[in-house]
Image (cartoon, rainbow, N blue to C red):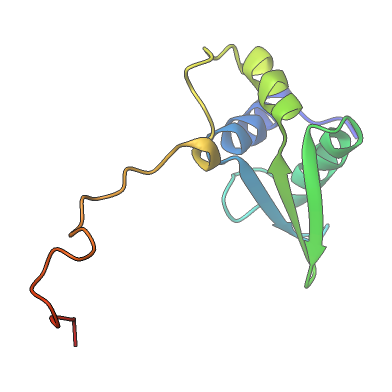
Length: 112
């Protein structure tokens, strides 16, 4: 299927930013809920990426789920001309808020 370059770029940008992508198995859906492109184009581009092993696919309850692989990250970095410092949201480490260490309260004190 021929996908316009503008739509291909939108899908690739979203996939790289989030690291994951989903789509309902509805080929007649006018547009994808997250990206302003037809749902069929999202499914077909991800089908192509799956055959090249850029994404890993899971199908459950009539929804496709795609997860970006390391090869896919490298491919999209080259395709979108991004520096190596930029990583998908799924690979970012979340800063853990400093909490109260265990055992720092008085003996027998516990939350209720």
